[in-house]
Length: 359
Image (tube, rainbow, N blue to C red):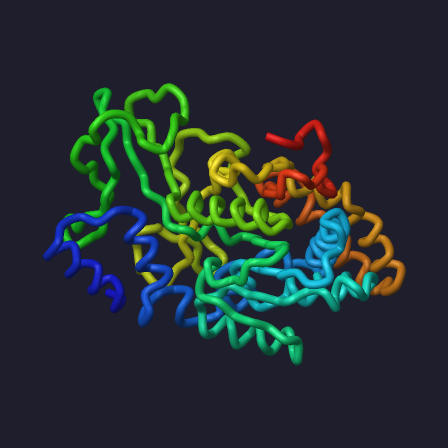
């Protein structure tokens, strides 16, 4: 039994079953035993790998998007460049290297990283070297100013609540201890329908997932860019429209892991509800979402891959494989989506065409 499992079992014994959100928040963020608080989970030696770790091309494309969007903002002489959950700092380093094509952008940017993990802050400092950086525990601490926000695989780790439709009644799914094991159980009936909007007509056994933290953050981002100018780029995995289904999952050592086993020792995530994020961000305007593969191709990743292969022929196969992994429908190209949240006065943003565009 992990130390965190013992802590959660005692909490359930004394206070009763807990929500899925409380379980996720504790497993990932407990100050002493939380998954993200005690180690660097990325890379071959960790539990998973993200797009920036697959290839420098990903961060470079994000960097070019940021430069182009900054220009549509009127190229403010000072602005906040914010990344939520920056991992090892790889994406930001690649972003800033690509942005050197426009020196005015780099001079204007004030770098802010929202990160709670001491281990990852240390890795970010090493990756970004002597760059001036301000770290924050939460987005609310970022100063008010024209702002560009980047969030790659951040929203999927925010705690979700789950609800199940049984015999015509919604009940919250809770986590209890059953024969010394964590198990999902149906809680008391809710009064009325789900209070977070309708996912559509529900059949018996349907499971709805709601992420209050994601909605709150999207609202805060929408308010900031509406009042101060700017945009946010959100890249994550999940369906385009709200729907039903149980997407809670865990990974450990790059393999599936039971979500309720070994809390604090495995990464926990759930699919992102892009429709909910877009709606919560109003009055800011949502552009997209579009498939990651389509967005990267529109912004020239295949041309960049060709240039890298030509510059270093011995790495051509490796570059091609990385490009395919990022854009192919059978890899990350379709499951991952790109959503932009922007000030209402900005036009459709790079890579997101009018037909997918505004909500």
